[in-house]
Every structure is written in C-alpha cells, then in structure tokens.
Image (cartoon, rainbow, N blue to C red):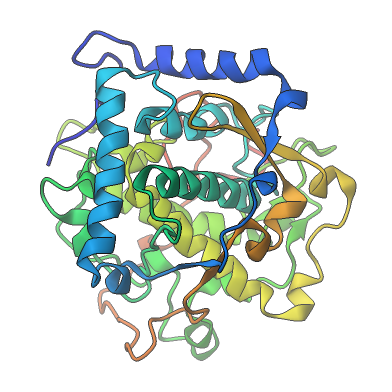
Length: 372
C-alpha cells in the first residue's frame, strides 16, 4: 500500500505545516466576506445519491472515475503540496479545525459544530471530486460499518487511490461495541446504533454532553466541551480501528486529527455518520430539538475551492441535505436484506474510556467533558 507523506517532512523535504500555513493564509487574505457560498453553485439536478460502497463499487466505470479523480488529486499533492487541487490541500481543513486545543474557538469537535461541519466538509470534497472526475452525478460512497465490519474491498484494494493512506488496521473485524451495537439489550438492539437513542440534540451543561446527539454550544459559559453520543461511539472507535498503531506506537492517518482527512475512507466513515444523523432526524420529536438560534444557524464554515478561493457554508444550509445536493440510498441502519453482524466476544473495553486530549496533536480518542 502506497501512501502520501506521513512524516513531518515529506520526500522532498517540504514540511507538512507549509501546506497548512499556505492555504490558511490564502483564505485569511481573502477574508470571510469574500468567500463564495457553496449553495450559490447550485445543486445537481437530479439530486446525487450517496450509496453504500458495496453497491457503488458494482459499477466498474463509476468506481474507476472515482479512483482516477483521487489519483489525480494525490499526484498533484506529490508534485506540489500547496496545489489547491491536490488531496493534501483538501485534507488540511481537518487539520486546521480539528488538530487544535479543545477550547480553541476554531475546534469543531466536542461541540455542536461536529455534525454540521463534517457534513459541509464532505459536501465540498464531493463537489471537488465531481468537478475533477467530470461525473456530475458523483456522490461520495459511504461505509456501512454496522453491516460491513472490515474495511470494504474498494477502499482496501492494493495500489488503489482509495487505499492510499497510512493504515495499521488490526487483523480483526470491528466489534459490536465499537459500532454501538448491543445485541443482548432488546431496546439497544432495535436502535441498531446506541447513539440513535439520544432524545435531544443540544447539551446545555457538561453532564449532558455525552448523552446529547449534537453536543454543547461553542463558546459556552462553563467552557465545557466533550464528545456527544455519536462522536464518542461509533465515531472515535472506527477512526482508531482503521488507523491502528504499529509496533513503535505510531498511529495511522485515521488515528490522528492532523492526518485523518488524508485517508479516503475518512469521508466514507463520516458519510455513514452523516446518514445516521438523517436517520435520527427522521423522528420529528428529536429533530425539533435541533438549535434554532442565530448563533448556531448563521455560523459559517470556510473551505478552500479548487482554484484556491475560499468557499463558505452556513450551518443553516447543512440542515437540509437536498439543499446541499444529495440524498442517501437508504435510511436503514443495516443494509437492506443483511442480517446484523454479531461479534461474540464483547467486553467492557468495547466502550472506550474517556481521556483528556487537550493538545495540539490530538489522537482520535473519546474526550472527557469539561477537559477544555
């Protein structure tokens, strides 16, 4: 398996941080007011459908276009890490807004920005690949790890641009607990993913954060931040499973906030988390608890487009996938016709312990509320 540079300095002696500083400076120089709203680009007609990779991959031509587009982006980054059309330039967004201290105002984890920011990021990435591939119907295929407990073949094929990442994935399947499935509890088994049992989106106190679906406001008077229910599990454990760790204790791309966006499966993982959000929103009572205040809805996320210009997405626009131009092939937790997988050996460690991670280089592990 080949990989993009994973060390602080790549083969050409170019620091990873050169990329981060260069693109961040470009966006800063342009200023927020100069950013182009993504919705101004218009949505594809008809709407693009995000598919399970197991189905998406059955169309060889479609899969080949996807692989070719990513290979083009990765090749650009190898030639020039600062190329705005490159894969590293796209991955830098996650480093900029996630590999920062827990209490940093830019941090989009551990608060109510988690779901909407990742939805926006995935949408921008999807639009870039659509543009580069020349396929106007392209939608990033998700990984349904509730059904498929190992990395899907399309994302694991040797030599493919879809597997071009640093991975130390253990030689085992994801356990039930790692994907939030508890078959011995009738209520939780019916939910499919335990986090879907959350009844409210927003937490208002530190003690509520781990029970909420969407997290706490940023900023908040208690300066308390932590993983919401979905962010804790299955979000964190799946990241750590894919990235893994080698014998020297070095983690793979998916195990670290700074490099997670470099692995193409990052977007497949977050696509499934995004789909779970839509499943959760299918309950009108739960959906009604989503914040309606301007501090939430009018907040804007800024990303960099293929030509290097900044692009913004308002949180309000992330509350409707059709406005962003896509739908999902199904809103069932498990793939239709597939039986839920049960991994027999369930132990207490399946619910990973919370740890404080308030540092610049943040490993993807569950975060303790109030650690900021």
